[in-house]
Amino acid sequence: MALPSRAPQARDLVDQDWTGPDDADCPYNWPLWKRLYMTSIPALLCVNVSFASSVYTSGTNDISQQFNVSRTESLLGLSLFLWALGLGAIIAAPVSENYGRRIVYLTTVPIFGLFTLGSGLAPNFVTLIVCRTFAGFFGSAVVSVGGGTNADLWRPTLAGVVYPFYFVSPFLGPAFGPVVGGYLIEAKGWRWLQWIILFMIVFNYLYALPQSETYKKIILEKRTRNEKTPTWSSKVAPPSRAILQRILLKPFKMLFVESIVLFMTIYMAFNFAVFYSFFAAFPYIFGPGGHYNFTPGQQGLTFLSIALGCVVGFVGVVYIDRRTYPALETKYGVGKVPPEHRLYGAMVGSALNPASLFWFGWSASAGAHWASPVVAAVPFAVGNIMVYSSGALYIMNSYGSLHGASALSANSLLRYAFGGAFPLFTVQLFSSLGTGWASSLLGFISVVLVPVPWVLYKYGKRIRAHSQYITAA
Image 1 (cartoon, rainbow, N blue to C red):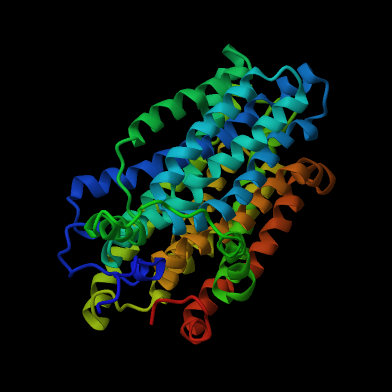
Image 2 (tube, one colour):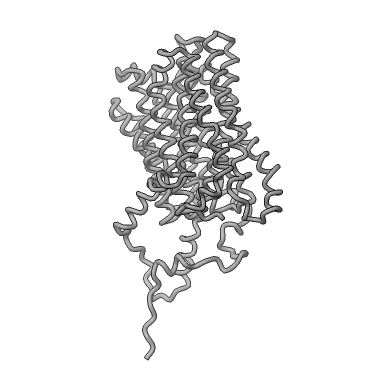
């Protein structure tokens, strides 16, 4: 007697693969316009979230006066937002690796909007920072999941061209925040800083609604369910305790047991922290009572140098990739280039960061024309983007789409932890040591970290041989 057919189990679904290289369901084979659209969604949302982090700083003086708190206390609205971004990323990325990217975007962005609305309506300081914290937590998904979405959509051949569009977004958003916020605070007040964030959320969410799922496992599971007989139930079982533990602990585990993730993350996190310390240092140096006594609107314009550096860094990363990667694919084969070759941009950019910090600090300290410290910030932004883009590409190429989102979420956790902490003591650091020595202290630390991409380039293959998660050869 024939045995009754067995209902498919989760492992059966996971073991499924594309029918071949031309499988129409594979995101690699989607029309170019669709892949570009899908790539633009996390990029625009990431600009939105990162803009929300920095535009707040334009209103800290008004917030201090209205709620009778100190300037440092008012910066908690920035720091808690960033800390929540890092914490939420730890959850959002592995959730996307279990339930898909689309559901993460479409469920978290509206909640991010609701807490932004709460921030704008806050009657007291406690309500403001609580709403800012939860806004950061729910906004974190687009920051950590976007890298995985790009890995789903683009073959490694094009990664060096497409990925930087997304990787530059966490820096362009903050750079434009004070530019917009400086004049908005003069005309409308600090609550309008939250309204402009909310307008952006509404537009970006409507733009993102038609998106498709990109994650391979979820696409194959859905296809398998559709191909099965109606007797099989497609109801998704609630996550078990073991699954929840795996979701929550995987990024932490990768951060501490994967040397590539740990050392590249420390380097990227320090650069990110210095980047966000500018949002406290620039008002101290350029703003009222500072070295240059600019108005809030004029002070905000100084951040255009950061935006310019981000664009130049992006162009630099793409240029290096196009000059090197096609030849490497000819040498090693398509899809077989060792991930260490993604580090060229970081190796170039690593020299720019300390040089910029020394120039910035001592030109401002000496009372040079305001253009000197403003221009000095450009090479830091260039180096920061080159290190971040190359480092993130290296991590994604090493761990692939299956583990890459978790690796980048671990990276996000430390980056935003550092980024949230530094602004809280930046003003005290600059006022105690002086602008020149405070900036030089950051420069000396940056010098110590310069060897990181060089060491990984030389020994990365040996390190990857001992990894629990590596998918690259």
